[in-house]
Image 1: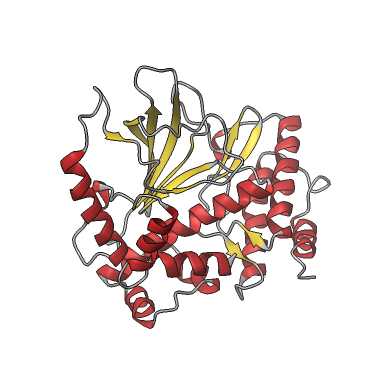
Image 2: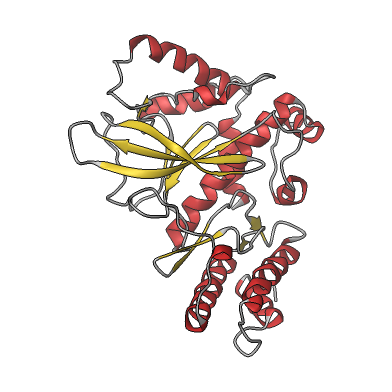
Length: 325
C-alpha cells in the first residue's frame, strides 16, 4: 500500500509539474482541470498551479453549459476508478454536473451530492463529491499518527508538512485525497464493501452515492436500531470486511459506528483517508485493536452478546490474517 501511495505522490508532486503532464501527454490524455473551489490563499503546490492554468485556458473555449447545471463533467480530467467499472458510471464527455446540496460536513472535508447526466438522454447518476479543505485549518484531524507509514521523499515538502505552512497544508490536503482514492480503489478491487471511487481531481473525490434514487443518504450505523437478528448479521458482515482488510495488511484506522453506512441491509465502510498499513506503521496493531474495540462498543450497547463476539478474539484473528501473529 505504501509503495503504491509513494509512487503516486512522487508523480503528483513533481517539482516542476512536468512529470505528470508529460506522462499524460504520452498517453494522449488531457491534463486535469483545476476545480475553482480549490483556489485558496497561501502557496499552491506546483500541481495545483498547473490545474489552475488549465482551467483558465479551457474556460475561454468551453461551450455554454446546459440549463440548471453547474459544470461540464470532469471525467476527462481526473484520475479514474478501477475496472471492472460499474455500468451506472456516466463516462460520456457530453455530460454535465449539477450540485444538489451538502450531504455531510466535517473537519477536513465536506461531502456534496452531485448529479452527472447527459443532456437529452436518460443517462444519469448520483455521486458523492468529497472535497478536502487545506489551509483553512492548521491541522488535519489526527494526521500525525496515521501518516507514519507513508512518506514524501522531498525534504522540502516534508518540512512544509511538518511545520503546517500554507504550502504544507495544501500538500496534506492533496495527500489525504490521493490516499483515500488509492485506498478505495484497492479495497473495491479486492471486494471490501466500500463506495466505488469514480474519479479524483485535485482535492475532490467523486464516489458512489450510497442511498436512495431521490438523494436520501443511507443512514450511518449509529443512527439505526436493528433488531437482534439484523444486529448479528451486520456484525458478521463487519468482521468479514475487516478480515479482508487485514488479509491485505490494512485496517480502517478510525472505525466507528459513524463511518459505517447501512443500505438495504448491507454494511458499507466510508471515510478512509487514514487507512493504516498494519505492517509498515509501527502502531498498526494498535490501530487495528482500537478499530475493533470502538465498533464493538456500539454493538454491545445494542445488545450483542460476548458469546457472539469477543473483541480480543476478533483482534487476535485479524492479526493472524495480517500475518502478524
